[in-house]
Amino acid sequence: MIDNFWIAALLTLFAGLSTGIGSALAFFTNRTNTKLLSYILGFSAGVMIYVSFVEIFPSALDELVLSFSEKRSLFYTIASFFAGMLIIALIDKFIPSMENPHEVRPVEDMHDTRKEEKFNRLYRMGIMTAIALAIHNFPEGIATFMSALNDPKVGVAIALAIAIHNIPEGIAISVPIYYATGSRRKAFLLSFSSGLAEPVGGLLAYLFIMPFLTTATSGIFTGIILAAVAGIMVFISLDELLPTAEEYGEHHLSIYGVVSGMLVMALSLFVLA
Image 1 (cartoon, helix red, strand yellow):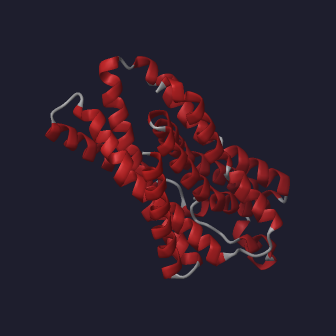
Image 2: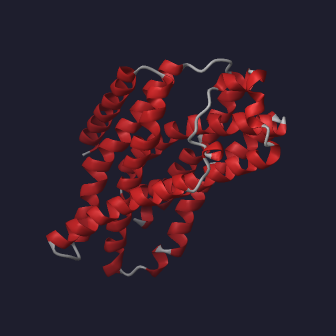
Image 3: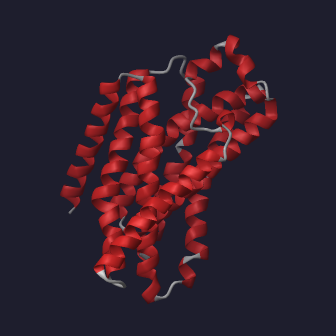
């Protein structure tokens, strides 16, 4: 896994900094292409759900079977999967909805002065939004980094899916921060820098956890982390991506995106097998 360090680091950095893409789009686009956004969010969800159940969950089980019985390994895998869901659910619960970056706002809100009153908390709201996004990105960074460290081809898929997921988040954080500060530059920089929480999360996990693992315990840790990653990915898909996709566009369009994402993921795993 050590040989994959730089691949994992670059993929996590790419996924995190994609918030800057969304932020830039917010400044250079007057209208949100809702159909396209609905489709790509569904596509991202399809990739994340498929890779979680078909690749990551079985890989976690395989790692744990090396140290425990098959039944106990399955129990630990399932428990870790739902623990990952619980972690991301708690993060969502304790971030106020007005400052939650997953409360997505259209690009055109930035140019509608009638809606400016919604963002009258000024600088405090902007900072809190950036902090909220960073908190959400932290476990996503661990998920991307550890997955890529274990299997680069799975890491590429997860990094791409999270990057797609982070683009509308960049839009979401830029809109209120722009109205909070009146500065497009500050809105972009805060949104962009918030994405750094992802590579930071992955790097901290690597620096403060990996050195304490022995040959015997590394497989256990990897299995537990991978199962938790699968839970995080599925929760993000069901709680954030799919509801947002349906809100922006037609129901069937988002489902077509889900199926397309699953198909592309299945074909890529088949080709790389």
